[in-house]
Structures are given as structure tokens and as C-alpha cells.
Length: 222
Image (spheres, rainbow, N blue to C red):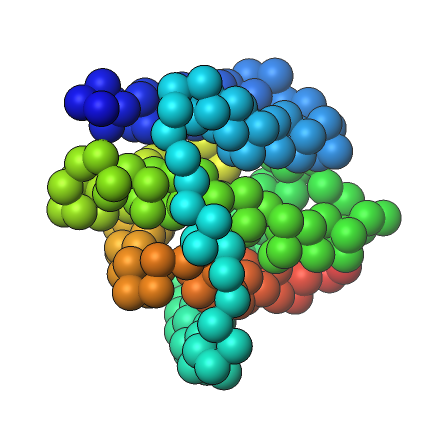
């Protein structure tokens, strides 16, 4: 039982490192990169946890319909905040150059931009919530202190995105983004902690990604 609280952090770190290497060194086409992420963020963890005897609560996937409207409202607020920051900093940050650099890093072009945007908002957000919230927070909380789970999952959520952000952001914005991601991770942890379910953070995460995709769309001229 004692060893299990170390398995989840080690698993999360390993999956993030391998994914980061794929993002920065291998740089495969987006479709292959997405398949690798599905394997690393869902397939591998499920196999490792099964072998280790660590169970994921089925209740984590149950749906409380009464909370949906509140979560959608919270998601809309998050969308508004992110988009508002974008509008407020357009005169300071070179968003067209920034977005173009990120699109090139991800090897995304206008031919399938919409499909990628849909996947990022729905599929990619679920994969990240599966690893960082369901496994690294909710499940880890069963074997370690809640405080440890909060700190670990939110930090890993932020650090993981270093590979995605890369050198596209200037240093001040890079640091601010990481701080914002860590804070966002804590918020996602909190709303899942109250319910013990994964879908609350997933819904809010989707809205955050929709805001980012909106900025991509506006600045890339897709």
C-alpha cells in the first residue's frame, strides 16, 4: 500500500517526459503526436495501475446533471477572462507571430485547423484531465495526503506545458503562463475534489481551450 503513493507520481512524470521529448525532439505530425498522447496519458496509466493493483473509482465518471449549468457558467467566465487578457495585451504581445510560431511547432495548417481545434477542445482536454486530475489528483489522494495531491497535480500540469509553449513565448509571458497554468491546475483540482468526479474540470478545461483556439483562429486568419 505504501509503495502505491510513489507509483502514481513516477508514472505521471515518466509519461510527461516521454511526451515532452516527442514534442521537442521527434516532432511527429500532429496525428501521430495525438496517438502517442492517447497512449501515454490514458493507455499506459490504465495498464500500470491495473498491474499495480491501484483502482480508479467508477464514480469518478458519473454525471451530476444538476451541476452542469453551474460548470458551464464557470467555464464561460474562464473563457471571458482568457479572451479579455488577450484583448488587453494585443498592443503589447505580438500575437500573430506568436500564434504562427506555435502552429508551426505543432505542424498545423489551415487545411485541417478546425479539426485540430475540435480535438484540442474535446479530446486533448479530456486526456489531460484524465492524467492530471483523475490519476494524479483524485486517485493519488487515496494513497497520499490531499495537500500533496494538490501540489503535485497542479505543478505537473504546468510543467508539462513547457514543451508545448517552448520558445514561442517571451520570458515574462512564459513565466506568467506557467504561473497561470499552475493556478488553473489548482482550480481544476478543487472543483473535482468537491465532487470526486472528473467531468467538472473537463468542462471548464474545454472552455479554456476554446478561448485559446479562438485566439489562434483570429490571429492565424484561418
